[in-house]
Length: 252
Image (cartoon, rainbow, N blue to C red; front, side):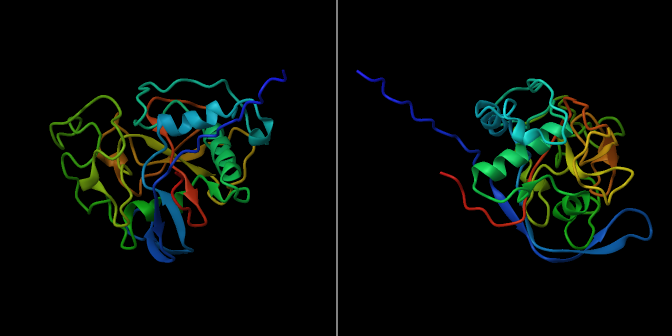
């Protein structure tokens, strides 16, 4: 008797998407911010979770060289806090980019349809058109983000770890994006010192991180605060969220 062929079942992460409409917005910090116009795009409502990233691992994402073109491929590393609904941490910029390439392909989309956001795209999703300092307004409010509030006496809370995504809905942005202040720093597509460069390479030039994390105080969680680090660096306070250039229906 011939063996029955096994059917491979692919589990695709079901991401909640929000539309960021086309138009201008106030970008940057300081007394003379600029006005930037962006086309419409769709941003993940939350950072990518451990469970969502696991679908990439389970599908052989680290074995398929197709996703790692012009990238440095490390061995996978577990998140510091591995609960399924917490943000995926301990991933470097290369791993985040490989995940987006894989996700575009498994959804039948053209390459780079799903990708990391540029910092301009990230910032608009976080602060809206009017250039809010924080996603919810221009003043920090205690309990609106997972940060170290005790460092500068901004409030009583310092959880000293990540939290499940979506636990701070009162801190959402004008477009309903959540967890964009605190929780985890989020990798962006472009280089820190050359923001116009978004292509992948193995130069080691720093890439942008945005949003602050559970480890830092409120100044770092400002929507206009820029941070960067080398792309092959991993940390338990760094994660990422993804962007799509086309609308995507929920995967069931």
